[in-house]
Length: 257
Ligand code: BTN
View 1: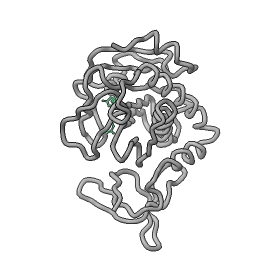
View 2: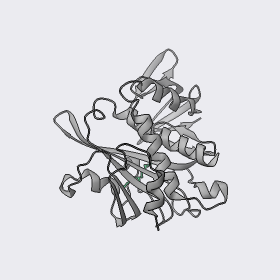
View 3: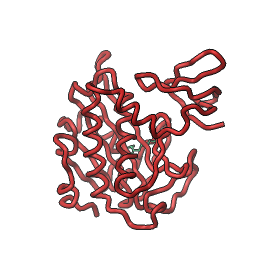
View 4: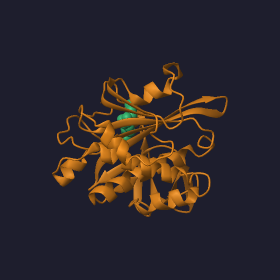
């Protein structure tokens, strides 16, 4: 059982998570917050569920998470200051905040994998899924869905990258309330740099990405491209270098070759 009081004491944010909704079971926290008919319209609302029946991962995959063990939650952003052209950077802000929170709280070294996986010892500890609704060419509603493997130690299924959890790495039970509050505190702090210093967010993200400079493959469906992971551009797209050409990559699964 998630202890709301313990969480609340540690939350230091101005807006993110101040409207906090906790539920035992839901299809997907992302789908629920994205759907306007559910009438959530406070910027920064966080919806945490103990169990998702249709948890969504990237690329139409399923996000598996055992009830009561982990953190599966979504954050709603509707304030215009966040919804300009910088959605990619929000993605990086979220994965960076997860990495920093895990490192600071548990002294576990994390690594970031483009576009937004958080890894520990080469295994996936957290994933992020951004979804949005637009009117014309304007984003109206943005939902950042985050799954962090906290206390689950048995993982069943086929995974592209093997999963791990904080408990699996540390061999001790983790207080989810403290981790969630820390994450939201860090996320809001990083998000505040979105308009003033987005390059700082990218710089910090890149400093935790081991693959920059390495030979990689990027697959999107059956299409595979090879090259050197040269850099990220200032919008967060991956720059793939091949001989003298540089291609900007928008989506795909990166692997080292
Ligand atoms: C990934 O594939 O790496 C992204 C996983 C995102 C999972 C989270 S759990 C909370 C939120 N609700 C969902 O349905 N998905 C995201």
